[in-house]
Image (cartoon, rainbow, N blue to C red; front, side, top):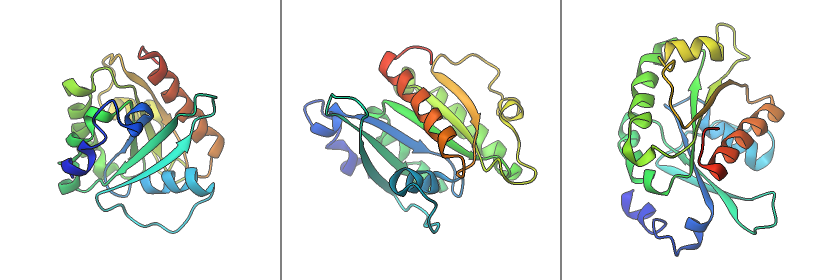
Length: 187
């Protein structure tokens, strides 16, 4: 996997001039569904990511540049490969299944690794507490407490409750991340 992404690591490459957003999270958190919403504007059949998927979208400005969304697989084995994508990351969307309480400890550990990784110290991060439409889902305020994110992390743009059925909210959260990427400041 490191070999496949290394070709995008050089600043002279076309992909490197675009903005690269990593779509991270544990398996079945909703990452692939989020990606298909961006692609087709509708939910499609769930097909889990094996390895990674790259989707490219033109930015809404006149720069001619694009946003590359890297949907990285969330299984235990696949998460070992995330580190190879960190050097190209301009932003991160971390998706959590907010109804699956049994995954919260693993999400907490994974997020701490991301937030404390030196390669990602200047990379803006948005956390999506997904599946808010399900009974028993934890809201974003409680999610911040559960994940022990009361500490101040400069690049944390926010934790947002979301459901894949709420397209306007998803777009709003993506714009918050892109704004943080453009300023490389607090979001």
